[in-house]
Image (cartoon, rainbow, N blue to C red; front, side, top):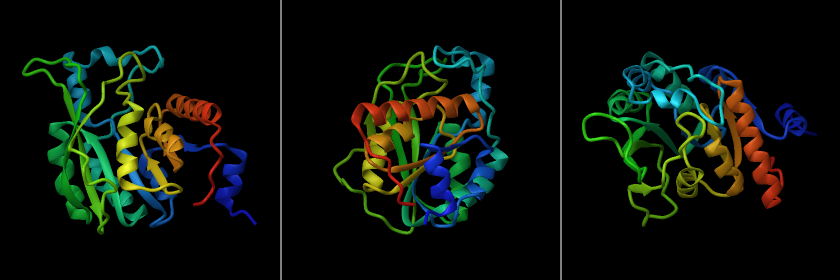
Length: 244
């Protein structure tokens, strides 16, 4: 007999919600997740947008969204407590951020119980906008709950993937998520993203035969993610996985 979650999933191809991220995490069972990869809309993005460095992102070809609701720094502790709770012991957590947010998140994550390993550098290949040494990179903070060995110890801490242009605001390349998922999970594991945006983590999870559960407060983002995942499933004839 299917449990309530499996019944819901049978009716809806993909388990992707549109709620406040922390509210959504509250609904997940403790130690039910194998990997978290997420890219919250942190405060400094809004600051840079206001002075013009990311103004071009407020509209995109893939989205009519003017921008997205900023996740305030003061809520990070509650968010990280919930992420720590839902992760199984001996698992990994990756958080995308800039150099300013890194100094805010790291001590909070350590306070709630995570071990911080290092910032992974995403080399975007193309130079970005800005005024002082224009940015070509973004950080991916690498945390661990318990102890889990990476699947490939030969992977460097600089991942080179060309940035997405003209897509959903701050959209990330699927190949970037594929590296992290391949390193920190195995087929059939559950991967979540509380701020799924255009669904790069969900698409990568589908391609790598992981179960994905996502959330984004923006309903348009949820629609885009579902459509992209469905397209991947149809193109690659991927079977639906239910093994939570």
